[in-house]
Image (cartoon, rainbow over all chains, first blue to last red; front, side, top):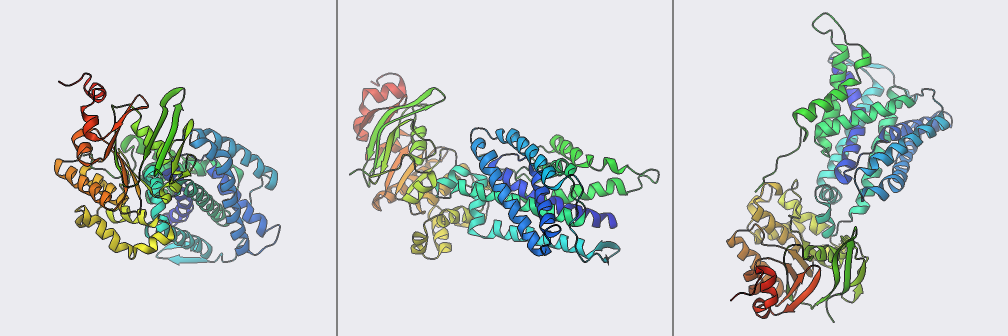
Length: 292
Length: 243
């Protein structure tokens, strides 16, 4: 049961990042390989506002999210928008360049020391045999609230309908008067906010370190490939699934004889991608269409 | 003054010249058929008129306003509607949502004038016999039903000028008649329509005027009966004059 709780905590972090990424992939059809760095910038910025500058945690979180939004917007204008219309694979290259620039900027601004965002509320709570801190439960609840809020926005509002229309058929949406280029921007900025939220989650629950950007990106991509490229809820569900599998891989005493080394934990996401590409290349939640 | 006026429109994409100095005009309330063999540039011309492609040279004027560099969504707000050759519907959305998204994209005042949007949505679906499928996903419809949904949605979205790209492609004879009735209804309402079609009898039945294109140029224009009898059209479509 404890492994399930650990999976829920890790999955909530991955779901935040993968949800935003799936939205970007669904709307723009582009891969953002600087996503992990955007996560780190959100986390480090919040730490910087809260610890060295001494701002209250709530204000620091809001500023961290705003930093994520601003970075995402600038990234879209400089590294994605000028390129993706020519070929949707071009941002693969430009966002690799962006990830390197951000890596260097993070080192320059915040050095390579691991950082944690301190919080109160570290007391343990036990729920049906599962242990978690109050902070961890708050993080899970905040993630679920954010995702539920986004689900309402996406499925029950005129803005969400326009967004889904642009995801499914951008030309038809534009011909009806939906301003697709503006929505592309908004979606990219929203994914940046989700990434920054993931970074804040990471900084509060674990530690921020410059080496984790790439594994975070890989996990998010595993979730969106397995979930059905561009299917946000498929990506969110698969993010939780991957996180739980990771916990099971290293936490279970396999056949009563051996444990898998924690070093192999990160291979779960890669295995997930390979298995899904072989078994169901269209993803778990890709829907079939009538052909005639 | 013409509702739409296109002058000396040319388009070159990657050294490939697709449109060569196309000039044409469409008057308000007119139903115009745009015909020509495959690859003659009809859909490309529609893409330029909708704003999806920018011409290399030439201009497009709508209601006297130069819209050559206006974005597709702004053209839609000016009243230009488009029905696509390859189904411009949102397959993962319900039929209700497909219509609703079109209504919600209207300028605020136009949306208010429509009244209760839910009633308009149901009225639109009822018009084409799809009300019983309102809660189904559009991707589950047959090709003909998708076409009717797209046409009905465009017609009810407050547009005044319609670009219909092969509206009867893949549609049964019965549904083709339904499409023809919808277009006739538009004429009664004083709307303007340009239709790309390969179905010449359909064009003859509903169009006031026909424009013939070939290799990116307008080669002929006139009333349907005159154009039908012309040697140029017969040579374009059948490779020789019909006896």
